[in-house]
Length: 65
Image (tube, rainbow, N blue to C red; front, side):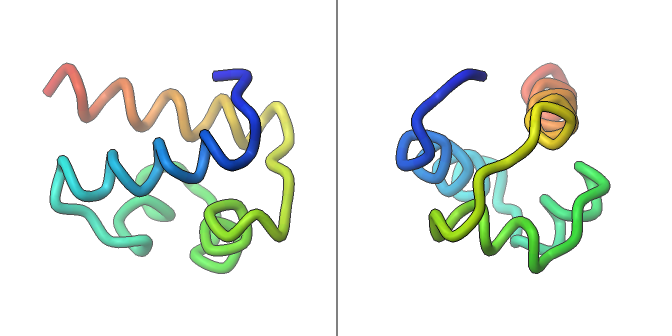
């Protein structure tokens, strides 16, 4: 998931729409704070490698479900 920040934001937004999730759901599932999710989606913050892995793990779990 080594994407430019704008692509990551678009991917997160699309994922939420596709799975009918809110930022709260994404935060809970990825173990990140809602504020951190907002900052990543808005481009105000660059996620760490650990955060990327947490997001990827959660998104993969929902995709397989």
